[in-house]
Amino acid sequence: MSILLKDLQEPLFSCILLLCCLTSICHGLTPDGEALVNFRTSIINSIDVLGQWRPEDPDPCGWKGVTCDNKTMRVISLNVSHHKLKGPLSPDIGKLDQLKILDLHYNNFFGAIPPELGNCTELQGLFLQNNFLSGFVPSGLGNLSQLQTLDISSNSLDGRIPTSIGNLKNLVNFNVSSNFLSGPIPTDGVLGQFGRDSFVGNSDMCGKQIDKLCKNDAGNLQPAGSQNEKKNSGRLLISASATVGALLLVALMCFWGCFLYKKLGKNDVKGLAKDVSGGASIVMFHGDLPYSSKDIIKKLETLNEEHIIGAGGFGTVYKLSMDDGNVFALKRIVKLNEGFDRFFERELGILGSIKHKYLVNLRGYCNSPTSKLLLYDYLPGGSLDEALHENGEQLHWDTRLKIIMGAAKGLAYLHHDCSPRIIHRDIKASNILLDGNLDARVSDFGLAKLLEDEESHITTIVAGTFGYLAPEYMQSGRATEKTDVYSFGVLMLEVISRKRPTDASFIEKGLNIVGWLNCLVTEDRQHEIIDGNCEGVEAETVDPLLSVAILCVSTSPEDRPTMHMVVKTLESDVMTPCPSDFYDSSSD
Image 1 (cartoon, rainbow, N blue to C red):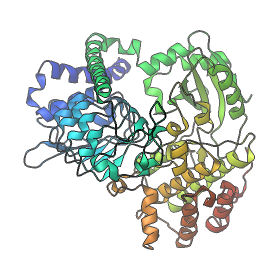
Image 2: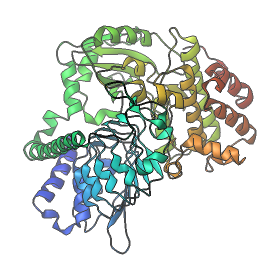
Image 3: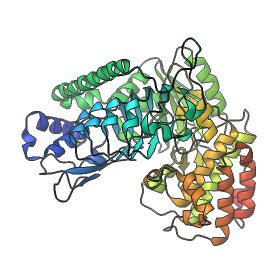
Image 4: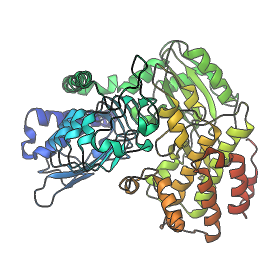
């Protein structure tokens, strides 16, 4: 009975919130609170983060991530970034008309940007980057006359940039990079003052800002800034209608299906159960696991949402525990097209043959009619991103150096020693996993190239993560070893500073972590990048470490070292004296 109640906890919570709003039981809550409740209701897997948002409260001012004006008690800031929240953005956000800061970046929000955001005319900062938002950029954002920062980079937005954005006279930071935007870049109003960095990573865009001529169908120069507003408005109307329809459907399903939750499960879990029911087969790369295909499939059938330990651009990750106590990580990847099987199996065979001390070991995969379930060794230390930014524990300086060294060795092996050589394409803190001793292992290598597919809009640009991407990579989408080196340099800076590459303090200045470093170097204050709370910092290691990082994040790819050179320099100048196992670069 207790297990059933636990399973029903989240859907029941959502249903209660929905019932409250639809039947006016929440009449004691302020209008701002009701808008936030509706925002919460549309989110999946957020009860741990937003569980304290209670509809019985008189106002939302004490809720996590919510800030109110002391006099009016109106909501002026909503910041729930970096919480892996998943779901569509509720149009009720537009009812928070006193909102000054909306920060939802680094989550898993999907669907359209609500046009209703144009009602939040007091907004000064809008941060939606690093999500999975799609559709057009609402022209109504041009109504936000107080807006100073607009960052919607690293999403899946398409269409053209509305000329109305040029009306935002107070706009000083603007970023739409790494999307699928197209057409001429407008030069209207303030839009003419932003340079290449604001627009790169949109292969179908053109304009003087990115040094790419715009041509019409006849091959003639097309004036930058011309728009098809009627087409955009129609698409926005369809998107808005679809969003409203989806929310109504969620409401109906919630009323009729709450108590069937345990049986039906969530979409991901239903998909997982379907994957292994009929026609699934197991392919193992190493013969050192004492399990039959039947044993593994039987365990896969027991997985549910409680076993989810991560989600990202490559798929959902589950924790799979076998009866003998061995634990594995299972990554579910949905197939992309008809020709996916043969290519995928060939490439997986290559990835499965690679073993190295500083790489996450791919054990095998489950081949099903609808997806691939990749079986990896489970690492109890979690990701480096969690260790740096979420766990609340300080990493000692020696530990940070050890992590940097391990990640460097793993990446160097991929670039120089394995056959065939592999460009990772998505080096970032969440793709560096830690074992029980906090030794680093590089994960997800090979998946970015493996999942490239024109029809699915999964490209080299989407594979990477804004803030880690080399400038030339965002422009061309062509990955090389040197683009990996740049990302590794960003990772080094993140580890020693304990700041994300796109920390809010950088965004306010129109910078990222590399821009911040360059400013500090110019003023001979580069030591200030070191995390002030880090214990055991050894002064003699700081300068050589920063020298390596500065070379790695050089604007020119030719000036960056190879990963072999990085490892050699770290060993000789930073890790000496160091534990003997760092000199053992052989595979397990």
